Image 1: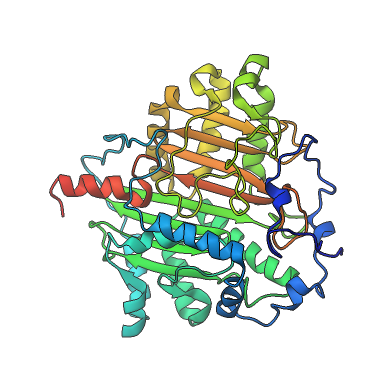
Image 2: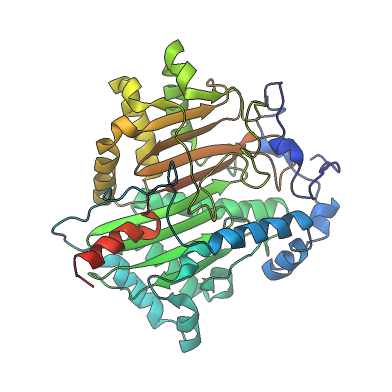
Amino acid sequence: MVDHPNSNDIDDFFSSDRVSGREEAVEPTSQSYREHLIDLDDPMLAEVRGMDYEEFAADRYKAPFLRELLDYWKGLYDEPFVGITSDGERREGLYRLPDSTTPDPAPAASAARLLSLLSAEQKERIGYPLDAPEWRGWSNPEFVFFRTGLRMEDQSDEVAEAILDVVQASLSPEGFDRVREAMDLNGYLGELVALPKIMNNRSYWFALFGTPSADQPWGWQLYGHHVALNFVTVGGRHVVAPVFIGAEPALSDDDRQPLFDAREKVALELAESLDAGQREQAIVYRSVLDPAMPEGRMHPADERHVAGAFQDNRVVPYEGIRASALTDAQWALLRDMAEDFLVLLTESQREQSLVEVDAHRDETFFSWYGATDGSQPFYFRIQSPVIIAELDHHAGVWLNNRLPARFHVHTTLRLPNGNDYGKAYVDEWRHRGFS
């Protein structure tokens, strides 16, 4: 193990190196996260050892950088919801409910079983109206900001497992496996740094919105360190967005594939397939720390990703190459990447969402930051009127790599133009007079 550097100049957890432009390539000092473990006696770890998540949050709130970040987040939270747009103007009519449906009763049945296990006080804490602003209070760091619903680690094993049953009943089998793996990796990180009370596989809040029903709109939210999911079912359509899934490290042992290995391989295949003219359009910056990036493009907490916590109304201009400039084979790779972001949806729901993606092929953009051969960390984004999906490699927080590395991954998924949290579908449901 190596010591955590003492030259962090923002606070003990964030260094300006992670967002400072540099002419040199961002080449990894090691491909192995194990060479970036912080000594367990380092004050960064030792001084918070034994704290629970609330004590840790109170300690972190003392940091000026974090106080400024939370004030910024609160300001965004207080804004009326519009949705992510490309130019500040929300496009209407992009999301249409099917004329006829066969509702899936499994999510509501699992939610009903969960509620049957709860006390009156727990039911009061877990439940919110369908339109409650608390939808937008999710975040992905290990410190607590909003406290929405029930904290899984504070519940009995029976209740915690019933919460996971709701999640499993709502997602595809492969999507649920992806979520559980990310939650388990959070527990693995807690073991690596010997802080299991701060990071474990139940470090998550869970809430219900609306009344669980097979034929009326309702949803649930699960969020915590490196996992945030928002599920809504309305009029025969399921939405799982916004989504944040990440990991540090993105694998727990050498014999296990990294969490996003398949997605990254397809992304690199697409990036490497670009000819010179296509590369000129698609590769927006030559590295993830390209000094050509404008001021404000990178943030010490978000680094390059634009669709994370509290970014519900962000204006994200299109950049990169338009999908109409890709060959059919390249579009197939891009579509495979989009499908992997949508993997949380059940197969039939995923197919319906891909129909929406296909309908906007000519308005879909693919952008890439960094080398395309896998030798360096990279960032990419797929963006159209109906999807924003991005993957970003980050510097260390609980590992001591001061520069981005491929073993710390953040991914986000949004439905721009107003359908995050299923809001566009709920609006159409009400417009049709079903409520």
